[in-house]
Amino acid sequence: MNPLYLRIIFSILSFLPFLSHSQNAEIDTLLARSERLLAPNSDSSLKLAFHAAELSQEKNSDSYLSISFSAIADFYSYFDDYDKTIIYYEKALDAAAQLPDDKEKAKLFHKLGKTYYNKGNYDKCVEYLNEAKKLASKLNDDEVKYLVYSSMGSVYSNMTIGDNRDSSKKYY
Image (tube, rainbow, N blue to C red):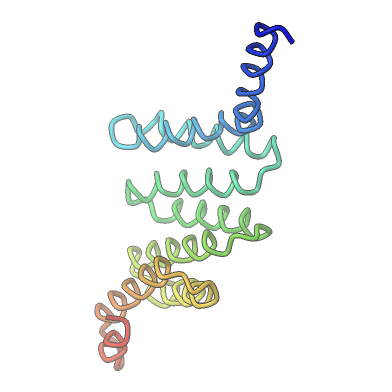
């Protein structure tokens, strides 16, 4: 076989992995740019995250839809708009509900718990952190366990009702 043909065939074959990966490359790019622009150019950051959510819906990708909604929630959290933060973390959780990845669900429960903590709603905070704790225990994932237990310790140490200060000792 002609060496020129072999080079052409190998060149084409070397690009095949990139073609299958590029299917969601636009969404990945939008999310990365959104994160990078959060502080210096917040309007652009939010627009990119919403655009990523729209593309995710068009492509019926619950995984990317969850990530996109989480990016939108992170934006609102950055600016202390906790009501909108909660709305978009809940949307992210709804999108993730059918996905097999419980680790991402646990992280979203954790983020919702932290958001309720920031709002001063400790009961709702503990409710979401307990959901995250259940998933973290099921997964036996040290990273998620660390996030959850450190947050629970902080919550209980800052609560002033009942004997919750003693409860914080089991999380620290």
